[in-house]
Image (cartoon, rainbow over all chains, first blue to last red):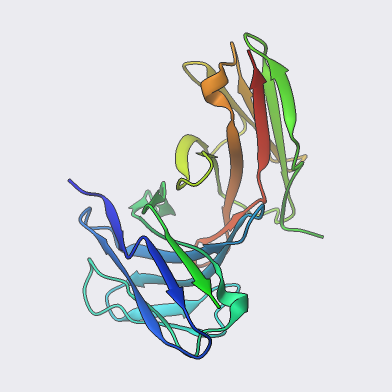
Length: 115
Length: 111
């Protein structure tokens, strides 16, 4: 049982380049999330998904896109990378328990630097 | 006003002492409350969850929730150097199960 996996672990991009951060979970969770965490700061929600084919914006969605074609995968796409997107990106998943979102399980994170 | 507020710290306590971490939230209809621990360079991991008023104990950890005063706290008894980390408070509210994290409190346990 791998839980939530993310690739790559580290990446350096040049301004204007694009990339996709991969996230996969094997817990059959309906809910999946993408967060970014800047140094010394909390987690800010970028996008989330409540199931395959359903996604919605979080607090800081500008410059990012997501898709959810399967329950397991939730990739995050960065178009036209900017230095402001330098951050650590965490993917998380959770299930519903009694109609309330249960514990979030986090992946190990992707450390992205845009130069 | 921030939706979920925590003192950024650092909070320094001697080994063996009780560490008390606090979190306040602004949305009165918040439903679920979580404490996560995050070691430097690592991802958050769940410590405690609490859903109703009162105390919930798990080993050395006790979560306390007071919905009337809109605060949730985490007590760590017999603090160990391995408890040194940043503790994130997370609150779930809203129709789509919106999850909001505080900025975290850095705890330092001094041997």
